[in-house]
Image (cartoon, rainbow, N blue to C red; front, side):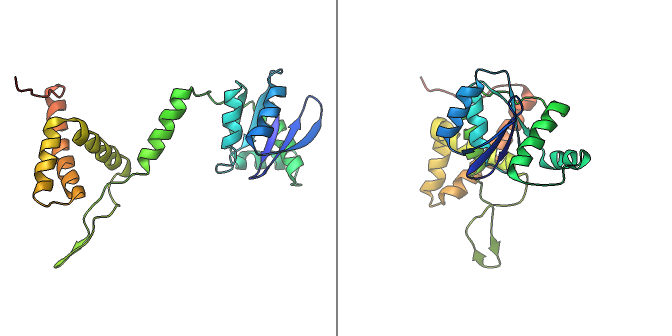
Length: 215
């Protein structure tokens, strides 16, 4: 089955009946379609649209229906190869269906609820960035984000925030710095640098972090 996805409308082509249909790109309409498709062994193919297909993919996964998200350029090249240069949404849905029947793309793995939540948390974490200096001459500017390996920086920054909240030794050092009127982000970055040193030493010694307790 091929579906041409847009922001508001889904053009659906059913090769088993030769039927073209339009539904709204809403959970209600998509769930209604899924209830019909659940009774059939079908792969639903669609092009990547930059996010408009997300709701459809999630609903299909929830109903246990196989889905494949295709590269639009490959589909367009395929259409030209079989002489379908005309481009309308219903025709696009047919081309997508034909492409899937010939190429047989692999269905996307259906993520569990835990995996979906984990992916959402990782995506959210990647939106939280670590600060770097912005100083020039006598001017001390506010810290800002940029440069370096962004993913590594974000992971270390978030790990430091968690450590400050839950690790007594790290929290004590952070409180010590802020008590000296250090800005919060400056104190966090100071511990981030210290954390890197500690992690390197732990890796070198093949040891885990051990919190010292007073008895």
